Image (cartoon, rainbow, N blue to C red):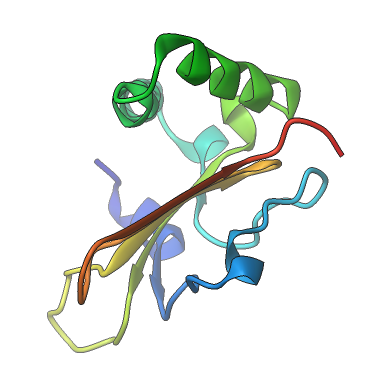
Length: 126
């Protein structure tokens, strides 16, 4: 869904990490990596909103609603950034190993290789 320029910001060689420190969302700081929701076109923003609904759909409706309320309280979808990580920069290797949606008080980290890890952290207050 991203154009070439957006991919330059969104695709990162390396790993966001799986440890506790890498999954601690910050209420004030902006994530330093990835492409900003604000940089996306309207149709791309709609896709991100759809992804958020899909990600939250397995949870109880009231829990998903609370997550969205907390995201709104912490600056809204406009503060989110999307990043796609690949472990190495092999020429022609477009396959990414992890993706992450991150913003103030929110991290959704999904790593697919060598096996699936999904971590979610949402902060309600400082």
